[in-house]
Length: 336
Image (tube, rainbow, N blue to C red; front, side, top):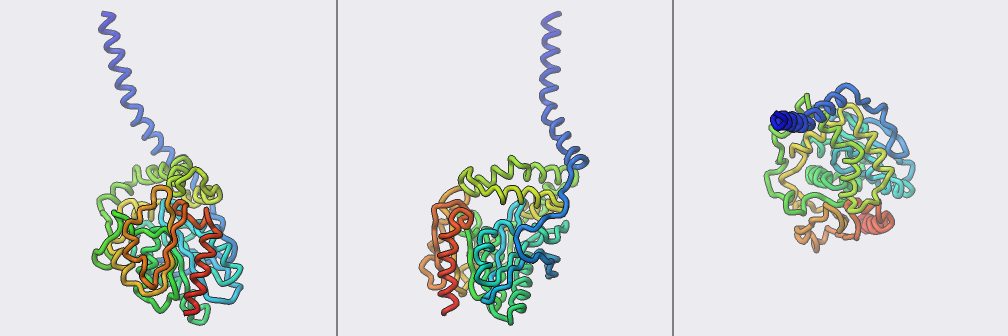
């Protein structure tokens, strides 16, 4: 009898233990839907004026420090679950002392419109093109310099291929498209999106709870440490990412990212077609340092490639090295 009771007791304990993960998941879903407070108004990521610009891709946030004379510079953040203009802060702060500088927040991120829709490379390229054309018009129609980070480099390259007359030069920091997975020669404007993957990720019951887990403080710190290849991340960026990722609608663009819609399948083809002067810098540490195909552009007369002993955000770790090299590149490009 005692043996039977012990066996029954063990069975109940095992069943209870098996239900614990389900109970925890249920509690997290309920807390995310009912108990979590979404962020209030998002404070500015950068000094200067923050306005909203209407584009074909919707309303986008645009920062401006344009009191100086000179050729305008447009800066564009990367793509991740919490992306925003703070990612270009060291560059914005440095160059605003010598020329007009702008920072764009892409659709679905930062202070831009965060609609529930599919986000694609074409949508991002249109937003960049409209912002670049507006900035050029504000400065007498001169072509502008533009610099982007990571996956957004592919969107900037696509925009410049569409309308090269709007751009004087391109800057690419840790650009996506030179690794084994994300290089590609697919049809122009093609991407790797999966409707099924997005439907699963964005399912109303667990979509926002899944996103809340992705942008929790421990998770966000983990991914930033992978980006840096070090625990010595920028704490200001981490704090602002937390604010930006908990805005209403913050999950919509990342769901397209998770489902592959924001990964172009034509990146190699687009890079090779560019004829503008191009400055590229990348790091050698962390999880985003696969540049096995960079040899396809090294040595081309319009490409300048710099490698630094940093993670994927070298402009935070070696601001002086990046701004000095990029400044010299801009002077050469302007003189040509």
